[in-house]
Length: 240
Image 1: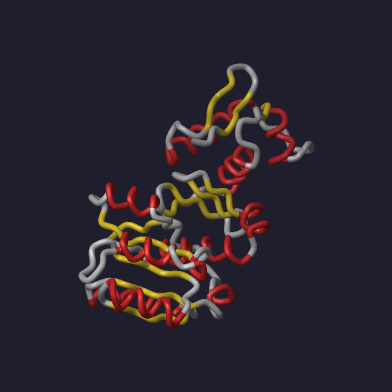
Image 2: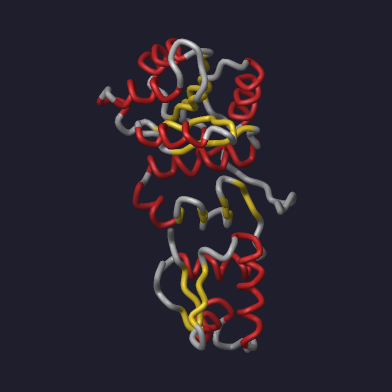
C-alpha cells in the first residue's frame, strides 16, 4: 500500500548529478528522461552498449542505468568493461531488468552492479532508489546512519520510507518507529518495556497487546522473516 499523500523533495539532491540511461527501447528512454529531468537530473542517453560505453567515457556520469538486453554489448558486458577502468570504480551502476531475468541480476552483481530496478518502472520508486544510492556516494557515513539496507528491505530514516524488494510501502508512524528501532540494532533483543519507553515515552501507558498488534501489522506488510519474537521478552530484528 502506498500513501498517495506523501510528497517528496528530492530536487536539492538531484541538481548536480548526471545520469546516463542505456536502453534500446525509445519509449523507456523517453519515460526515464522525462521523470529524471523533472527532478533536476542532467540526463544523457544511449540506445546500445557500444554508445553507452563511449558516452560513459566522455560524459563521466555519476550514475548509469543499464538495460540488460541491448545490441552491441549487453548490460553485463558494459558494466564489466566500465569496472575495469579505475575512473569507474565508484560510479554507481544500476541494471534495468525484466522480472523474469533473475539470472541476469545475479550476473550483474558479479560484475560490480550496485543495484537493479525491475520493469515496469514506477517513477517514485525509481527516484527514491537513485537518491538513496547517490546519498551513499555523497556521504558513506550519512548513508550508514540514515539508510538501513538489508538487501531485501531498505529503510530510509530521513524520508520515513520502507522499500521491500524495491517496492515502496507505507507504514503508519508507530509501525515505522518500531521497525526503525529494531532494525537500528540487528540481533539485539528489545524488551516490550524498552520499546514502550523509546517509542511512546515513559509518561504514556500502553498495554502489552499494543506492541504485539503493531508488530503483527508490520509483519503483514514485510513478512515474517525480519522480526523475530523472543517469547516472554520482546522482539529482535533479523537481517538476512
